[in-house]
Image (cartoon, rainbow, N blue to C red):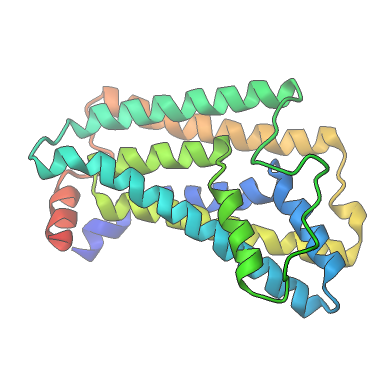
Length: 248
């Protein structure tokens, strides 16, 4: 059973982890703003990293809460015995991801991509008790509940794999994405202590990396579409039965 569960999903989980890592470092400036701000209010590097870690845990929590809600909604047909064709679900999910990636590409090229909610001046309030671990954790949850296009892509994948493969797989997709997001926060901190010029990369270089990431997303989902059209099960249907048995 472990072999059936793990092997088909290793690439998908790795892609989710990579997407989460790049999602933090590249387009979502709200995390970078929080990073620089936390470095400014903390007296020591260790305290700054602690604040950043709590903020990251808040992001993970909000992502998993949204994932659980998504899984609950998409699992309703399964509990009633209505299991759609996995290939059809994979096709629809892949098409949705490609459309989202193309929309992201258009927004970035036009300079209109503004992910997550931010305060008007980009600052965080100073009148809160930042010595309390609840404060940065709370801000992490708030940031996570205002999803960017990258998170919408991963929630679409969550719904896709929940219906076609099982609840556990759907949750793990978001979990690995969240871990990638959490890990991506700390290179920003290391770069800050090594010199702020590392963070302030040239726009053209930064966009090249973003374009490469979008192309990888599109190519990966095109492969899923082709396999679905050829009626090749990307993930065995047996995985769904195993997942349901574990949940039940």
